[in-house]
Image (cartoon, rainbow, N blue to C red; front, side, top):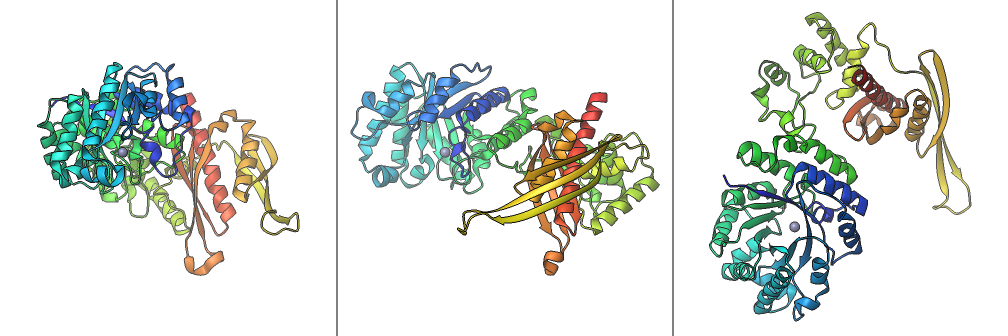
Length: 532
Ligand SMILES: [Zn+2]
């Protein structure tokens, strides 16, 4: 199979996703990660449309990429204007890169209804813009906007746009499913027709509105496309773009196309988490290949099969994409998953059938009290550790107290009411007892602050651990405020994430249990890392 070039647009189309806003520094960090991953082109932004992107291209001059080439994005000249006077094209030529992508309309309807110009003028806009940029010595990719929709309603015009772009010197014709509603067989037919108009290589830019971005991209590759555009985690306008975290392993592991090296592929999970972290989005655990649930096994039957043969319920070896297998523990699973899980936790004590049964009984008892270990593997590992007679916890709670106070400071109603939370925590570390007080914007936050304050003196590296997600679930809805609550906490040290659980009739206590497990788990991991 021919080679495929990867084109990332996380920094341009990716930022179109609701809720994402990258600073210039964020963009520079992500660009460096993408280079490590080995993508061939990194689209940095649209210098003609906003000053932040101008600053990015300015600063990006100092980045030395080992694999990637930086690309600036812009549109064709405006109707009735001259290319050499068009501010957007001038900004592209001045971006300090040697590759640019210029987007132009390929749908007759879009030209007359939205652009409100003639079909002929649109063709001139495409030709003039590409010629202008080529005369500057640049590599020019042409993004054929709405190509597939245009092909459906007026295929002659859509193909004519491509011919004009090819004749003007475009180095790649990127066919865009801008509205994301095309089906894979339609993609293949249109790509084949596009291949007939010139010898210029083709590319594909797909959106996920019909949940087909990855499938459509694969179909386009089968039909002969050589450049594929996408974003990390599929971030992008509306429902997103082609997810590079899925398409890269699809190409490499399923289709045998060496678009990245084995080592780069093994970075994939880390890159996915890194970008979601910078985007300030909780990583989607159910993402194929890179999600933490992608290789998790829950049913006891599956787990026992996995113990016999790794491939029995996995389509690839998770380490190929830098992910790992997880075994979930719940009432559903049997003794075998407990043994498997203990092994996974690197426990030297080999649990005999009887010990495993004891542990399973304990899990069942705790689950009946509202704990759930499916998605709280860190709490489960602690449960196993604590079952060992020589277990030394890194800290122990003596007691805590939380005060929540609602004050009205000034007589106006809405604006100046505030509530203050203060926590006092007493913990034992070795023989020492620490007594700390901290304030927070809520009781759990105050508790977290007070606990950290106490522990930082002994474990300064704990400062890297952040709480990234906090979820509360009411277990018996009918009993209202008297019901049992379950708290899930996700913590991160910037590299790994882990989940802990607490359950109690008291939300503060449930939170405390999950918080303390989160820190205790990390301290234990650090200890084994240092000693091992
Ligand atoms: Zn797009």
